Image (cartoon, rainbow, N blue to C red; front, side, top):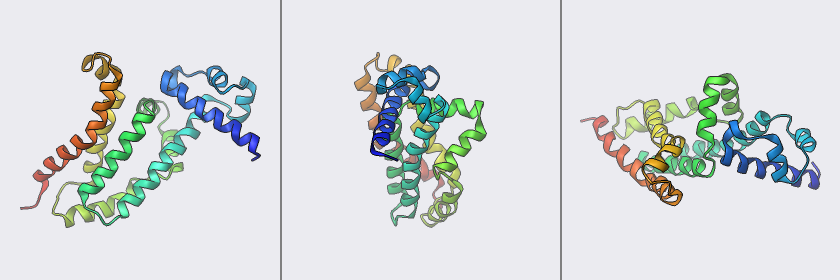
Length: 205
């Protein structure tokens, strides 16, 4: 790809992220993305034929980065608590920078689950690969919790406050965006404390 084409693609992707963050997947329009990128709509369609294809490309790049990092984290010789910290840090940072992701995923679960699964596979997200080594480490450290329960519990606590941002931000923080952001960042610590405390229930006696 020529340098000019790379520059144009980068402008499109940066503009699309801004529009997706502001308007969400459903509210985003290709014309608005083209305007923000400083190109005409025809050129935008030349690079990405539809809003869905554009989002899938962004989604795969974003999730692909975290997918690779999770794989590395699972192979590190650190405790379950340290892996939990790394996992929570990664996902909270990802969702704060891309708050449209949770609702996109929820919508796609209903609208096109096969397509969503394909996006995950394209991004090298395959939870089955993590389950066996995670199970071995949990058992080694004396925990009886199932690995998929461990992961799903964590994801629920990370994702819900971001997916429910319009309600939480208004009801709890009276619309103060900075206070909401600080609250989400503080959950990096509180989630780890909560999970590790709850894990004592699963500790072998």
